[in-house]
Length: 149
Image (cartoon, rainbow, N blue to C red):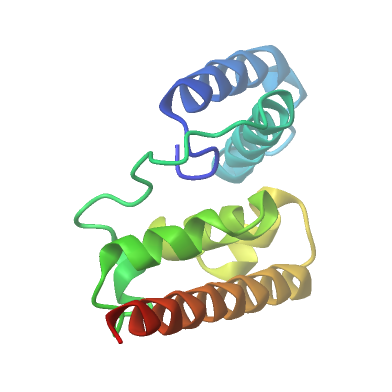
């Protein structure tokens, strides 16, 4: 849901992923890697759904009230709506890394394994995502300050 920003698309992606897991289970060589393998299939299904449906609901709440993403170094952000606006501006690739790392609390090496990218790329995407969110939040704050004046 946090990757696609739409509950219906997320449900469709989940169904696709479960079907893919069921169909591809005989091809899984190492049962110890089931979790990472199934996450990867889920992320791929999310990407596929995202490509099918590019129009995402602009006012859908992305972050639940108890979301740990708010405590990731951006905790100085008082306005939760600002944080959501910054999160909305991220690309699917950046949003995926942020969700897996900060929301699901997975280490970056696991995030990289799940998505199927090198660890350095996961670090880079996370860095760029956080930088983009901070820039969006700063711009939003400056614009709000001008509105007050």
